[in-house]
Every structure is written in structure tokens, then in C-alpha cells.
Length: 449
Image (cartoon, rainbow, N blue to C red; front, top):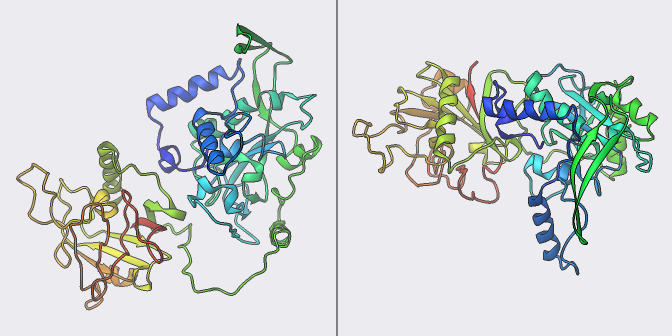
């Protein structure tokens, strides 16, 4: 729901177990009420957070909602939306993402307040779909009673059945519309079929009565609304015009947002800009911060799978080029291009080498006696360059002059530099990195141009 995980980062066919679980859930949703996203781990987190600020009771009341779907605190517009940017038909332009503090789990920034815009006339390269319900819960409509069924359909259903995935950067994949970006358009889904619900409860004690079953008197059918999401919400008394701007509406939406938050444009302070998202010459495979990709450094099976995927992207090219883009590193380390000069040995996990263990020789615990004495040494196995063109041309004199290696848990490029030792520009996915100008935000990709 936040974006990320293999369900979004790898849009290939789902494995049998995952696809089967989603299929069973969708089948069950035709005759059962699907619950809203709630789980105990969130309640424990909320309790600890409240105790840390001295709440007199030490707990929070209400269900432990996921932050994207908090009906108590973050869903006042009675509307939920999902937005996809990969595998789906483009139908919506993205005006601007939500405020950072409204979706901190999606953009992987723990603290801070901020906002950005994608453009006043953005391309229609996103697909957004949602549902809305009657805000008067004393007279609930089917879309309120069965909102869990609708959410299952527009989220997991779209991934499993249509191959849609990947969230808009800085935004959740799905959430109450307050947590979502402002877009130009969104489709709408609604429920039809059953007219009533019956519940069975079990009395356990004077303090505890539990729900045992819910039965619907007809099959649940999910269909398109008669209107788009914005108009359907308006009919139900929900105002979401600040989130659905309409065609050509991004200029007004951005102006309204900046004015309501007392924000004014400021001159650039020289921060490098992220690379173009539509640069088809590069295929991303890892990243942190704003370019977050799922990773599990303590799982050998995961590391092996990711290395295999990386090798498949590289293909048979022994002189491939990798790019690490780090917008907030030192100027010398914003863009680094790794140019391979020798074939990759079979025993080398290139993925782990770059992310966590920048070694120029096999790790000592590797038992295979046939492994080479070295497999990742500057000027022998690879060269580093500061520009793509120099990397493509392997321009004499432009290659980096210094490198070191072999510090466990420290990834690329340790203290390598264009001329001499440069510290604190290395990335790591298994330990903390340096503060200040460092690779806390960076993106790894393969050049396929």
C-alpha cells in the first residue's frame, strides 16, 4: 500500500503462492465482508509513541489503522484512491505529491515538512482509481459497508489481474485521498448486488462479545461508477476538488496549495536535480531515500535473486556501465559510472558488492578454491568516470585515480575518488551511513542505451 516491496518493484508474473492468496481473497469477497486494513503491530507502535510523550493513559483508543487508511484521523473526505505509474493505461497527470508528513512511510523520510510539484501541464502517465462513500454513517451506503472489498479490488486486484504497479514518487500506492497526490483525473468504482448484511456474534463473557460471521444476501459486484471519482464524491457530499484538479487544473491546484500553506517560490540553492524519471536508457535496480527499492541484506536468498536479476539486465555485455546517482553527495560523487573491463566471475555477487561489501577480492569465508585472487580492482577489472560520455568512450585521462576496498558492511565506492581518498561517500544497506552530504538518497541503475 505504500509502494515498494516485490509486488511493485518487480512487475513480472506473481509466484503461485501469492497469486493464489489474492485469488482466494477475491473469491471470498464476492460473498463476505472484507475487513479494513487493521493490524495489531500498528497499535503497539501507537501505544509506544503515545507513552513516549507522556500521555496520561498511555494508549490510543480506536482500531490500529494503517497510516494510509486511518478512519479516525485521516479519512475525512470518505474517499480512497490508488495511483499506478507502471503497467497501467495513462489517464491522469500528477500536479503535486502530498505534504511529506502525510506519507512518511512512502517517501522513506522519517521527519520533515516539505512539498514539491511535478508540473503545471504534466503528462498523463499515471492511472488513478478510487471509491467514495456516504459520509453519514447513520445511513451507510454499500460502498461504506463494503469498502474493504472495494479496496481489495483496486489494489491487489489491479496488481494480480491487470499487472498494475508502482506508486507515484513521494506518495502511497493507495490511501485515503488526503494522503494521496493531486492529480487531474481518477476513475471510480462502486458496489452493487447485496441489499443487506446479517451478523453472527458469540457471547464469551460479560466483557467480551466477538463477531463470528457476516453473511450477504447477494453476490458482491464491483462496477464502474456512473461518474468520475470527483463527481461521484460530490454527489455523496464529499469535497475532493483539491485532489482531483481536472484537465488543465494543475496551475490553479498548485497556486491554491502554495497559498494555503503560506509558501513562496525561492531561488535554487544549487541542489542537484534527480534524473529524468522517463530516461529509458537506464534501468534502476537499487536505491535508498527518495529512490527507495526494497532490500534485505540479511537474507542470502534475496541477495542471490537480486544478483541474478541484475545480471539479466546486464545481459552478455562484459563492458557494461552502471550508474550511481547521488544528488546530495559531494560534487565529485553526484554521478559515478562504473565501467566493467573483465567478465564477471560466477562466484561474485555484484548486487551485494555494490550495496554493502565493496571488496576487490573474494571474501575469506568463501570456500571455492577456484575463485580468482581479485575480481574488482580499479584499472584492472573496472574504471570509474564522472560523466556518461567519458564512460561510453572510456576517455583516456578521465578515469578515477584512487580506490580502496575491503571494509565489511561498507559498499561502493568506499573512499574512492577522482584523484585521491574521499571519505563518507559510500552507500550501505546494512549499516548507518555518514550524515551531511552523503548517499542517504541515491539510485543505482544499468545503462542500456
